Length: 136
Image (tube, rainbow, N blue to C red; front, side, top):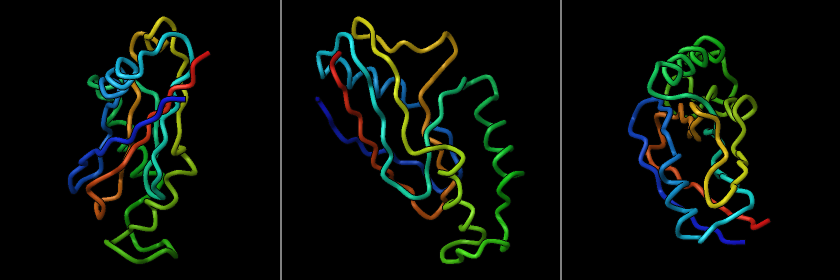
């Protein structure tokens, strides 16, 4: 298995960050052919999603998360900024991992699909992600 870690700067606001180009670079470095790409974010307040970006779906996802998990003081987990407890619930809805088939060195994503980091934690502006390639 070939594996590496990258650092992603997310800034001080909730973001959906497209990782597809990062994943493609990783696969090139790995000399990947057929196999499985696994993406892992080792943080308790971030998740991964496969979705369309750039046409509003990324903003729609953040809006839906704001409705589902409001940034207020209802959360028992209360350290950090106001409503930070909701960030700790996020990985139950958007898991911290994703796996994508790789065929001929190319991600087998659908036409409009992207691999995205979803980070609502405004207190942590730097994330680590691990890409791993398992040859088939």
